[in-house]
Amino acid sequence: MALGELLHYHVIPPLFLLFFTPVVQVLTQLGDPRPLGWSALFGSQFAWAFTAVTLVWAWLFLVLPGPVHHGPTTHFGQTPPYRANGMLYYVCTLLLFVLLETWLMPGVSVTIYSNMSAILAALNVTALVLCTFLLIRGKVAPQSSEEIEPKPLPHEFYRGMELHPHLLGVDVKQLTNCRVGMMLWQLLVLVFCVAGARLHGLSSGHVVCAALQTVYIAKFFWWETGYFSTLDITLDRAGYYLCWGCMVWVPCFYTYAAFFLTRQRPLLSDGQSAFVLAAGLLAIALNYRCDLEKQRFRESGGRCRLWGRPAEYIDAEYVTAQGRRTTKLLTSGCWGVARHLNYVFEILAAFCWCLPGLGHGVWPFLYVLFLTVLLVHRVFRDEEKCSNKYGKAWKKYCRQVPYRMIPYVF
Image (tube, rainbow, N blue to C red; front, side, top):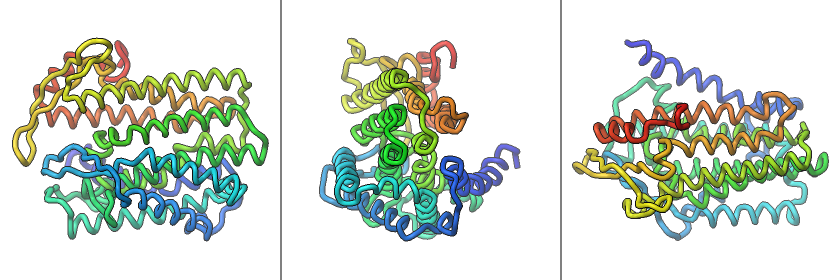
């Protein structure tokens, strides 16, 4: 067995399981050092109520009647349907939060902040049970006709078994990734900002940290149907990496700058905070511009204009269970500058909402460091997938767009 295969299938998955699962509680302690009890392992009554309400609320918006969006057809012929009401869900959830904080349950943000270790424990237990169920069902009674090569059990648990599993009438990845993970990210940054203001007074730096993330997440829900064509959906299976990651790691780690600043108050002046806000909004706008160009190109079948000129592309063929298919690889606009210029702007936006933590060490910047590694790794995963899928057309595309992320650098 080659060393790379040994590490990939036998070593890294169990190490990641043993490291990332408990580290969420370590991070909570670093941001808010208070004694931990059994609730940090199994949750509390409040934490389980919070988790149950979150899951049921998210599930309801996926089963209620509404528009449907179909994702890309898989190589084994499955075309997954998704509920296309992301912005409605987002707005209704924020309105409910405002109603609770201002009228029904004043101070609920402080309660949530004070119970974060228990909430993460409840989410952790829920996610691990879900991943175990998906593993067993994927091996015993898979919902698709896809045939995949058996791998070591820890790797299968970490990776997942199926691309588009359904549970209780909804797509599992849309539930865990979009409606639980992304929405908890949004709610928690607002919770931490409000809790910080109630406990220590309002801080412009903390407001900027929460505001930039709010704009970024609102953009995600506006663009949610575009997310269904990304690697998370088309390549990654529903397992620990994706489902646990979105249900536990995202609420813990992606919100960490805002969580940390609830106790350790920002040191930026109001003027510095305003500059960071402007820079962050520009980065988010440019990131959205990249995503919007790709979405318009796909929806128009290549018949659109980018930067005042007709879109340029390369025709590519690939093979599915139904035979040969064709697609177009965009080579103009933002996507002609670099193959993943959108990732650069995403990293810059994250850096901006971490900047209010300047002066408090590396802890508020953990997310942007993690994101940089994650996205660079994703670039290579995407290239491997596209090279295998499109062959010669992909090589031609790389010659026309030679830079991965930063022109003349990388």
